[in-house]
Length: 192
Image (tube, rainbow, N blue to C red; front, side, top):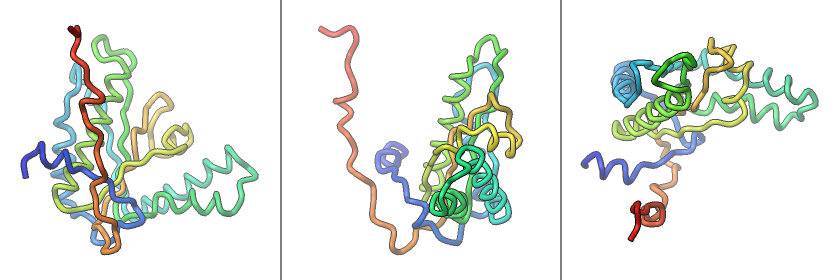
């Protein structure tokens, strides 16, 4: 399958369908080596990757619950359980962030975030190419200063996603979903 074909059939596999085994350390290294090859401006290299397996995921689960209770002290048991479970749903979780340098003369923060987003996309696509399932999610914890601080990031940094990775379970629905026609999103400028 060519790269274009692979990207056209890219899919997300819900974390609830991701099971062991997860990727090996060698697989993770190979994928992250591809992720740091994405375009970036001014040699800022803003990407930060936090690789979490069992213990890291459990700790992040506690951070997520703490964050929820800071924001919603009266959160009900269902909301707490949902937030607690979020980072535990897959064999591997990679947090992708942009460490923002707001003083760079050529690479404004938005470009740094875009580069980290590209890295997240490459991570998901590469794991799919290796035969794993993956899904890129965000949600309130991605925008929380408490979560960022707990992960060693500054408030100005941006978590662009949490990428769940694992083997697609036998009950995972087939993909990919129907894609839009690119003609509906493209125009030639200037037009006729």
